[in-house]
Image (cartoon, rainbow, N blue to C red; front, top):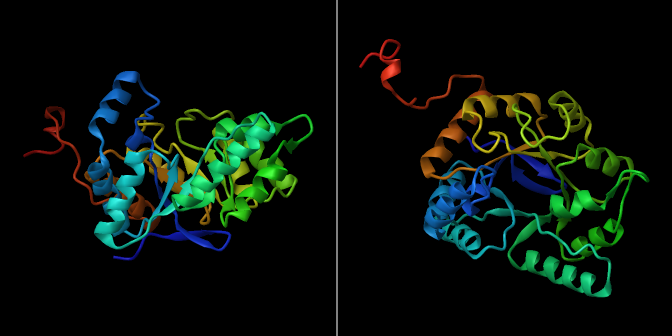
Length: 280
């Protein structure tokens, strides 16, 4: 089987399908009960089992807050099993108080990102979108943030939920290599209409990593992935989070089938209500 399609962030080759990490860490966007279930269920070995499936398909890139012990241990376990390296896109949050102490802390954050193997450092939405100044169409503090990331051999990027960030970053030639954007068929957590968001992604000067394609479990994989893969560019990416190896296999096969214009080879769930259309 051919490796999954790839793209590039500057000179860095990455898989177009990105291993999402919210379901590893319990960031469900659903309920505290579901979050507690996941955090109690997940461990390094379960994470490694899932990542191993992705690596076996040539999907070798992940994104998230890659400083949690269980997350790092799971990635390293999968790397040891397969002999393949996971490319890490980190989304740290920064101290934006703009004091000497804050910048010292931010330098330590960037050092930590480099130490855990991050190749693309994308300050998280809680940093990026606060520092976006729409009145002046600029990003405060990024004239210092981007060089600090570059000095450590990482590529800067923007993890943002605001489509305005992409437009203004391109407009001001901000020194970043890629963007994260919320994008799904349900409009879940999207601040603009879907058609406007698509236009911004297609006009972006840099490759865009789209997230929440399944709207945090609100869309069936076939629906969410068909929309995402069919409405972005060949250089753009889709991050998908899964909780089990079988879920990973299904999402990969569905994604391949969409890109190859064929019917997905996945076994559908069976219930009594389907007895007429799927006789035993």
